[in-house]
Image 1 (tube, rainbow, N blue to C red):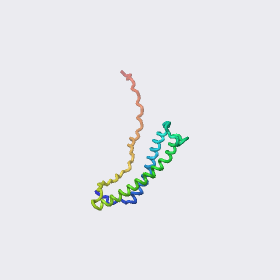
Image 2: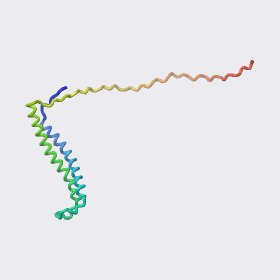
Image 3: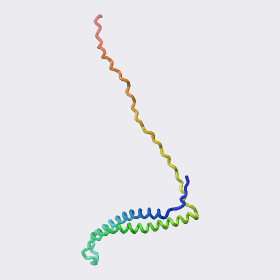
Length: 141
């Protein structure tokens, strides 16, 4: 089956990109903050006296709170603008040269028959044979 992608909905691209960028931006912000926290924990003998009483761990702790929030907001705004512009440009180009061709295959569901466990029937009951008498030596000889 061949299909052609003729248009991308700009509003749907904006919504999806915004939400994905918020989540990814928050995760990236946490990674950046942990990196800066590791850098700030190094002894800071060269720290300027502009911040008396502020240790590297304190600044790193503040970064751990602020960085994920700022990165998620920043990435959401930048990526959403980029996705909206990309969708608009794609829609303009599609009018001139045509859309992306997609070759899709239909997956047919496999009907699974229920498996009935059948156990072999036991053999019919046969009573045990009566015990045989032991043979006696013949005394007539």
